[in-house]
Length: 201
Image (cartoon, rainbow, N blue to C red):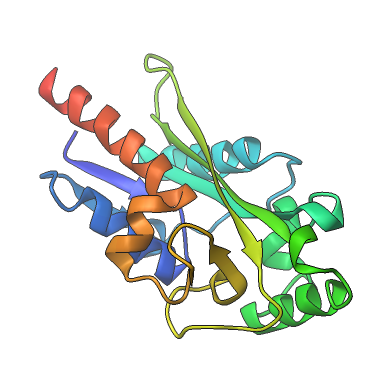
């Protein structure tokens, strides 16, 4: 296994995952560099959406493919935005529009009821029917602030407070975030699976 396609067009996400896989001598290529577009995310779970994206990338490229689907579920909103996190305000919403809507909906919610979890389902699939799909799911728990803090990260990071670090996702360094985040934990598990497969030939 010398190359793996990453089925994502999110530049921030691609940087995070490339950092995690940097120690392996495997070329991680973005699907965009191969002219592959993401499918519409029509499923109602993170794992199903991740598999949808990875299977298309593997089919189109003929290479193993990784993908993830991730989002934030807020306790006070009954788990919303959930799988619609990237499209919360509208189908083509920006990060800022999604953040504005979330903060607006939580305006009157007190601190002790602003619990939330970042969810990530990360998958590895092959363009054949020999290998079994690898599916990993992780959750990063924290709290939604009343306003943005920090200049890093992307998505909902500026309002998501990690209670242990007392920093938002946008205040953490990439290394800190990769160590504790939902996506970091999920893709480290995938990286370990890839390492085992590479060693076994």
